[in-house]
Image (cartoon, rainbow, N blue to C red; front, side):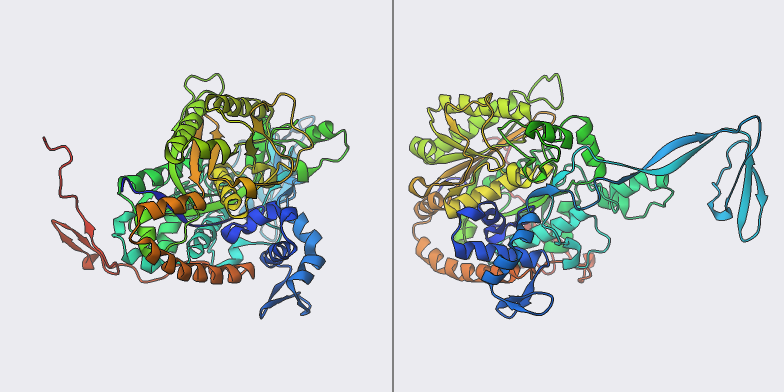
Length: 631
């Protein structure tokens, strides 16, 4: 039968377009191309997620108690839902008035003393040289000094770039479980992984009962750690702002924490854990690790993904100082306008000026194909290969290089080998990195053009998810891959709808960069190429096969079991649909297993053959064969 094939049996998460499972976020991106009923379903589900309406039996109600149908929700709240999703002006904080501290020095004139009063408890632990302190009433002191004194005075500044892809307005991850001071990125990891697990339509215990504990793996991370107040942001800033650090800020700030939280609080897993990062290509890095382990037989189940809450003043300012972000001033210059159009700030392959920062959490549930057949898992696609290559010697850490030529061409060659030239030539499309920078539009379009020439491809459709949801850093390729699964389901390739025309320096002879959604019902897609280019030379390209193509492969690989599989799959789909209905009412069933009984280490049984762990139906078994033994 050959090597195990890693198949996607569930997916979930949240980004600026909404919830990933049941394709809600994808439907938001192609909203105008959907039927009226699908539009109403999408808008009503987003309305619940955003807290505009709530469940009332099988219908909805607003917060005045009026009962509404999905059609009425769509009509009444359409503008608010559209305005509160996708790329828009930053809402998580006020980008026009970001708090800062200005350093000022105060000195005396004519040798006069500087005198000021403050609470005694506010005196620094070590008095500056030249300070004379006199006791006053009511716990106050007077300070006299002739020395120059430095002070930090609270002030404000504007962000250079005020557009961002944020979770839908009103959707607060912390409100859906007992978040216990978790940083936003870890809240998103809990919700994203839960959504992915529920989307499978399979009970997690049923999955665990069919595999050994160490055949489960979690592959997850965040590229920029947790920079919000509850993580590294608070750890690094607290003392400078006159506050105290907490015992949680350091451990919760680590970039491994998304994997650790999923293991400890979602799965209760004792299996493999891996937190690889590769800048903006991080999702494909963790995906490659999972695919590698499933193909080798080491893992049979993998939870793969990232959570990144990168819309913070510090991260925005850091990228802006590199000249990487689309600034308000430059957007105005491009448009000849006085007011920046934040909604259309991300403009891949057009006249553009930088990328748009965003936040996202995206997770996949992968299995080997044999286990999927045994359990009756629904399959949404397969990931047979992910390729990663560096750039070699670079002049600038942020500049693109040659590594992507290797990863992308290897991906196309692999797809040709797996599904044949005809499928690649006539039924494949590209999810470009499409970061919305001038350098990216030239270099990535040239890359696509040269690869198309090499493999004799014409009219190769290219789309760019960042036009809708911005650049979510470690989760960016996850946004792309989830969108690709949507194309497989709805047979629509999203157009790059934030641009009016493709820039003249973009290579277009072999590729098509559609400005509107493209109906591919007559040319159904079999393969998607997910491409990513990260700072530092982190290039990655994944091959994703469609369910149509995959089902024919599974029928061929599992002839005797396939009819039974189809029967089991109907049960799975019914359970997944039941979750989808609840999730559309914002009943997210978040899995958070804090406080459950721990495994007693004394009850673990160790033998020369393996480890027996209480609560797990199968044992961990040691390898009995020496792979390096002389033949």
